[in-house]
Length: 448
Image (cartoon, rainbow, N blue to C red; front, side, top):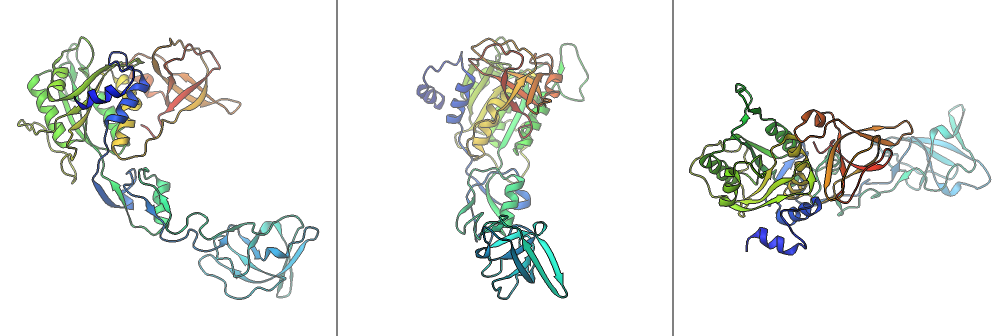
């Protein structure tokens, strides 16, 4: 029994001719396997990578009690519930230069944000809340009654992170904030999973590459450029294999060469009913592949599975760039055979391929974040399929989010996709949407 068959046997009601969007996501979560090669990278090279190990804090953060404000530090035990507090200023504590000395009752120390709290002091009053009085060389402050409680405006040692605890966890994507956190711990390098190598190509005799002269019945290939952008945003090492004609020998060369050097292969075109069957036939010949009809719009046809990593004798395509070597996935390369229509390619990538690739990258599985927005127009929708409508989210006068579609929703209309900033997700069991109804939106920012 193949892997595809084994997973299908675990799923109730599995029907490749009537897959739900949720069913596809569940299936892919079971099918993909993460990479296992670890790279230790300098922080400047680690942005967008996935942590292969927890980042452990080597010390307490902050490493000492310190002030959260510019103000005056004193012992909070002197605060009274019914009287203002007057204190004499006897020195200044600066950030990066601890103040030395003893502070007696009735005294305080001027302190800057981040400065170490002097011994015995536990409370800070912000400078803008005190009355300052000078008499010669003597400086005093008066703190109004009821303004503070003991411990206010003090950051405790280890409050953010305790020594030996995980500051960042395995499987987290290294965002700019997380890079900064690692740097704040004095770490020069972090352990990450290596980037995924993803090969992609378009199929079909009707596809023109840029630079070719127009001809009747042919269209320029936009899919390679949108897929390149989607993969690059995800931090993948991209292997562009161009356009592959409807020729069995060329298709076999493309698939086997791609599988020899990539962790995943993405194709566009050649999986719909009625199209030339060379692509489907080659997928079946070289791998363990399922062909689905998904209850969704756009993007109904899709192929998934694995392609053998046996090296082709054709060697028709250049080796991948970089210093990571060939694919280490002994099970073969994951295959995602997407529809040919440009919008369907992007929608199926965002809905299914991107979450699967993140799992392969070693990222912790997380549900796709959906925002709620009120529809400014009526949308027709029949229950029984998931629809992804191109939409533009904006802020309504009352401050809430609103969304409207960006025109024609045909799966070949790229303009409406380019004008959108998210996809309105109308779920499988959902019906018509009325003006003002709340809908889910998958935002592009961060995903594209």
